[in-house]
Image (tube, rainbow, N blue to C red; front, side, top):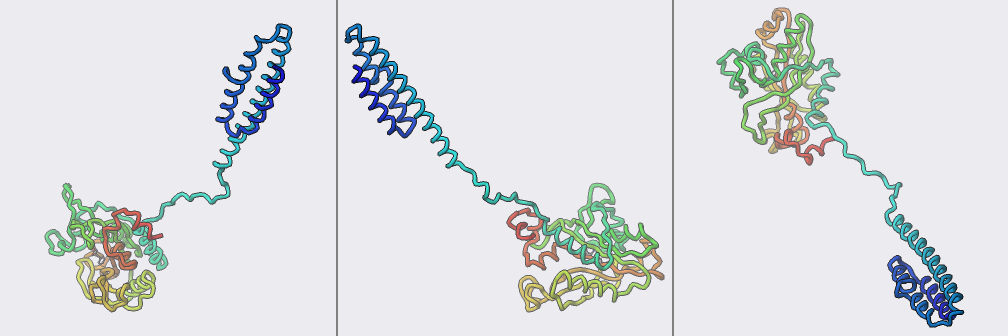
Length: 342
Ligand code: PHE
C-alpha cells in the first residue's frame, strides 16, 4: 500500500505540473482527490490490510493527501495569478495615447460675419447700437417718411401683430430714429445690427428672418463723398481684392438722394455667372443721404445738420463672400454646413 501511495503521489504531482488552466486543475482534483478519485481508491484497500499495518498506512495516506492538497492550492494560486496578469495585459490602457478631444462649439457663420462687419466699422469710429426687433409702425415706417398707405410700404412685406401699431421690424432703419432721438443734438456715427422679419415665402433666395446692419452718421458738413469713402473702405476690407464697384441710383423714402452699391461679382470676377445672373455685378447694400424730413423727425435741423445712412443684409454678404447659394442654410442648423466655417 505504501508503494501504491508513493507511485500515485508521483504520478499526481507530474500530472499537476502539466496542468495549465483552472479547468484542467479542477479535472485533476477530481481525478486524484475526488470522492471516487485515485486516493480514495487506494484507501479503499485499507480494510484489507492486517490490523497492525493499518495505522501506519492511514497516516501515510493522510500525509500524501496533505501534500497533494498543498500542491493543488499552490498550483491554483499560480494559475489564478497568471490569469489575472493575462487579463491585465490584454486590457491594459495605453496612457500615452493622445486623448479624444471633446468637440467644441464654434460661432455661427452669421455671427462671424457680423463681428467682421463690427470690426471694420469699428476702425472707422462707428459704435454698435442695438434696437428692438418688435417695433412701432411709427418708427419702422412713419418717422422714416413712409406714411400709412404710402406705396413704398410694398417694399417691405410686413409681419403685423394683433396689437395696433406694433410690427416686427422689417429693416434696421428704425434704429436710425431711435439713435437720433436719443442723441440729438450730438453727432452720431453708429451701426445698428440685428434681426429683421419679412412676410416672405421662404426659398433659396428669401427668408422670413435675416440680419441687417444699418449705418448712420449725423453731424455738420457730412457729404455724399464721406458716405462713398466709408462704403468703399468697407467693401474692400470685407471682400478682399475687390477693385471694382459702382453706385446705382435708387429710391428709399428715408434717403435723398438714394443709391445702391454693387461690387464686381466675387465669384466670377465680373465675367458673368449664375450668382450675379450673368451681369458681372452683385448688389451689397442700399444707401443715401438722410432725408431732411427724417432728420427733422429725429430732432435735427436739416438746415444745419446732414447725415448719411446705409443698410445691408449680412446673410447676403456672407453668401457672396463664400459662394453660398441657399439662404435657408443659415437657419437650417445642419452641422455639415456650419462646420465648414471656423
Ligand atoms: N432699410 C433699407 C432696406 O431694408 C436699406 C437702407 C438703409 C437704404 C439705409 C438706405 C439707407 O432695404
